[in-house]
Image 1 (tube, one colour):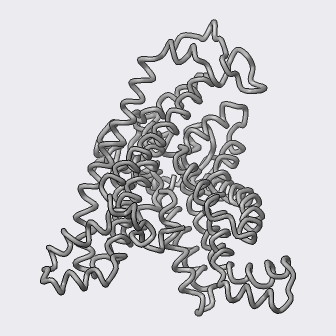
Image 2 (tube, helix red, strand yellow; image 1 turned 120 degrees about the vertical axis):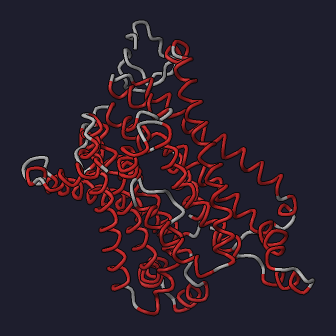
Image 3 (cartoon, rainbow over the protein chains, first blue to last red; image 1 turned 180 degrees about the vertical axis):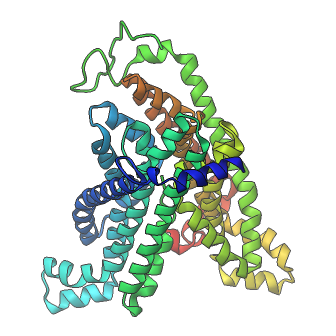
Amino acid sequence: MDVLREALVWLNDPLNWTGRDGVVDLVRTHLLVTLLAVLLGAAIALPLGLWLGHRGRGATVGVVVSNTTRALPTLALLTILASSGFFGSTATVLACAVFAVPPILANTVTGLGGVDPAVREAAVGTGLSSAQRLWQVEVPLAVPLVAAGVRTAVVQVIATVPLAALVGGQSLGTIVVEGFGVQRYGQVVAGGVLVAGLCLLVEGLLALAQTALTPRGLRERAAAGRTRRRVLRPAG
Amino acid sequence: MDAPTALVPVLAAAGAPPANPWLSWTYVERNREDILGALSQHTSLTVQAVLVATLVALPLAALAHLRPRLAGPLLGASGVLFTVPSLALFAVLAPYTGIGRTTVLIGLVAYALLVLLRNALVGLRGVDPAVTDAARGMGYGRLRMLAAVELPSALPSVVTGLRQATVTTVALVTVGVVVGYGGLGQLMFRGFRSNYHAEVLTATLLCLVLALVLDLALVLVGRALTPWSRAGQASARPARRGA
């Protein structure tokens, strides 16, 4: 219980919150790195997913990609990038972007592939071109699943970013890693609680946003997307 | 670690400086003991974690299946825990469970547990109602039906869960570095610290190979356990997990 008291003392010290490398600063870096990584991942995964899903042959690709990245340890990718000359946050953003791709890719492909064949046929029968079918029929119907995929990616990345502290990337994880380094376990616990808190908070906010933004008729689909995403990877 | 003075790059990656190749057989030969030690630590942690998780998850899944009211809270709690990053989990556990194997093991078991529980429940729920109806008609009680009908029918889904949990665990072990017990992760981290590329990449490749080997082994175990599913694979697997 002594450690718990130390953790509370650490959390109560305003000096730990403000200034350079304070909690506020680290949270800002953490969120910025997350944002960049997800944007980069989405920039790769969305076009690819749209292309594969529209052609209706992406299902296996999605599975293969997510299985491979499940086996690749985050730490391995981080150390490889960090040792090949990408320092600090660059290595973090690149590594996390790699792990943001599978959920977005898989959900985009599934979303497009899951469009009712009858709807697709109706679109063909109406005389829509391939591009029109994609943008006017398939994409709008797939939006809930794609959004769920992006949400998964955000949660995963935000949980993976702390690991970068091991290879010199700044984030809330820095508090934990530093604490282990100097064997101050109060600080370690405090950092762990902050990291977990940030992840749960963001996850909760995104869940609320998703429910609020999904039209009632489509909520069932979004729920299906949620159960899917859980099998991908544990966070970080 | 001794400085790599006469490294002969067998397959130096393009563009890497010759003095510090990513792939080096000399490194593997000189540090065989070290690498095998890390590999066996990694393997034993993975196997132990998955075994413990299975022993806990299957009864829990059966319980949640018998008492559906428990399923919601169990899965909800598992979802929350899944969101907590492993680094944070290890950080909070370490002061209480010590620096070393126990802490890593608890974390690994927790994550594997969730994957297994979810898959087992999906499998149990996906049993064809016609089959359970038939069993009930033959006078099977609730427990006997669970043991003799539902659990065997759920085996494909359980094996899928086992495979996912195992592969995930192999990757997660590396995070154990923070408490000094990360198997191959130790090599990666040390290689990063001393800027020794071969050490980092060898450990990475071994991680991938280990995941692949264990995954294949489980596929074979799954086939041996469910000889009937080869005949009608499509019907034995719950449709939701098909993709």
